[in-house]
Image (cartoon, rainbow, N blue to C red):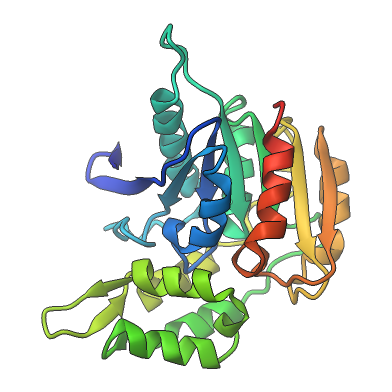
Length: 283
């Protein structure tokens, strides 16, 4: 479905099927909701799974005004969550419960949405959310943004893109199914037969540059049962602070995976998916 979050601005929300309590997937920077297909496949055995494409990602167009602020993306997640709640409405019309499963940027924006609009989610599972502790500030120059601006956007085919990504870091760390799903849904077909990244290099760079405004303080009112998950082989500078983030939230706990990096949900859908299912049971 396409949702209008404000005049002239739309986002895509995908109904990925399944039956049971609703889960809304919120993706990492540069990815899209349907890149998490292996995880989706596991979850929808007992959950109704939805995924949002945040602005400038997947099938959601980049904002005309260039607003990639993460605080503004709260509007995207809130609109998606309310639409999912309406679709999951009880027989009497009461909105259904929606659980958050967020990765990196998606986890941070999802928790900020709950903090700003309590009751949006029934629970939250966030994997390495980009949420800064008081003692850490983002650098003035963002190396991730610099790298994004150099990213190759156009390939002769999806097969060519897949072959390149599978052979080079960091995307070669992804599970083969997740990488294939990212290439399938993260590219658009061009008239000349080539394919181009849906999340354009400049959109990704500006999204990275907008990070750092979500902090322990801004999400402190997110009181739903929450899992803050991290990988022990992650290169994220925020991982050491994750136990502190969990302690700072009203109802959170920290979980660490010894074999996973920052792409955890895209690396091992079985382990992450089972923990999401366990966490969302009973909330």
